Structures are given as C-alpha cells and as structure tokens.
Image (cartoon, rainbow, N blue to C red; front, side):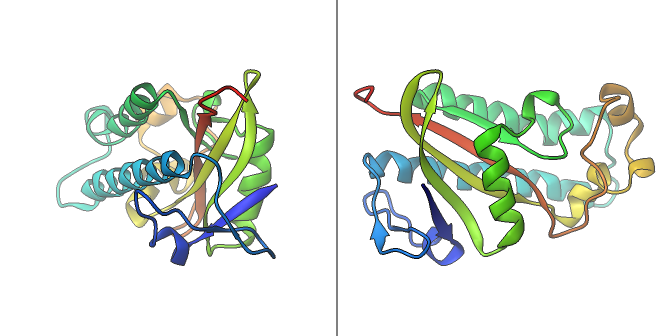
Amino acid sequence: MLYFLPMSKLLLITAVVFSISQLGAADTEPPGSETLSRAVQEIESLDAMRSGLAGTFGEKGVSADRETFAQVCKPVGMNAGRIAQENGWTVVQMAEKYRNPAHKLDIEGREVFGIFQEDKSVMGIWTYSEMNGKPGVRYFRRITVEPACLICHGEKDSRPEFVKEKYPEDKAYGFEAGDLRGIYSVFIPSPDGD
C-alpha cells in the first residue's frame, strides 16, 4: 500500500509529528515516524542543494563542462551517500530516463514514478517495503526539472560534449522545465528487523 504526501502535507513536517494521508483514507502514521520525518527533511535539504547548485549554470559565464559538473552535480550524489551512511539507509536517485544505468527504476520505483507523472501535486510517497530480505519503510520524493537543468538534460544534440563522451548510452535528455526528472528513494530498515 502506498501513502501519499501532497505538497501541503510536506510543508507541515516536523521532527516529531509526521502526518501523511493515505489516498482515499484517514491520516495514518507509519512506525518509526520520527525516522521517516528525518528522512524527508534530509531529502528536502538534498533537493534544495541540487536546485541551488544547478542554478549556478544560469549565472553569467558559467558553462557546463567536466569541472562544473564536478562542482555542481557530483556533490549531490556524494551528499546522498553521506546521508545513507550516517543513518544506515539506502539513498539513491532513480529515473525512467537515466544517465547512469545504476539509477534505473526498480519495480517499486516504476510504480511510484507513474503516480508522480499522473499527479503533480504528489511530492512524496512512502510504503512498507523490503530490501535485501530486510523489512522497512521506503520513501520516494519527486525530482522536478528546472530551467538550469536543461543545459545537460534538454535537447539530445545540445548536451555538453563531456556528457556525450562519458555517457554514450545516455537516456536523460529531451526534458522541459517542470517535467518529472526522476525520484529520490530512501529505504529505512526496520530497527528490530521485523
């Protein structure tokens, strides 16, 4: 069963109270909601970092090259890894049109991606899940294409040369501002293993 976080609920999250509504049902709170709340806050910070760094492409004189990529896009992935390691979670960015094959949607990711495509008001979804035989909760959050993202994710032929060289099987192009680019996925294992 999937539980949806519309934007209005996402803005009300605090470290202690985490109110999520199940589609067509009353509000429900998952076990370990403080941990889930922390995960949501971490991903919101990560997405704000992504948005802020991507905005540097729009600044005068900043071009999209290997060096800029290392200063703008790479830190987001590194920060996701730090969040995962510090908390014992699995944190990945996933997409239907991926650049790195390691970011391809899995079965749950495909289902959630479809929901995000259908309803732009849904910002986050959590569900009970299992990963590598361990039960837990999985949180998904949409990633939206911003105008600055189009430098690398716009038209196929206008992608920077280093992207074409580094990712010959690239599928992450052809977007427009406002499109669903991908999703963040956070798996939080149950503390007691059940």
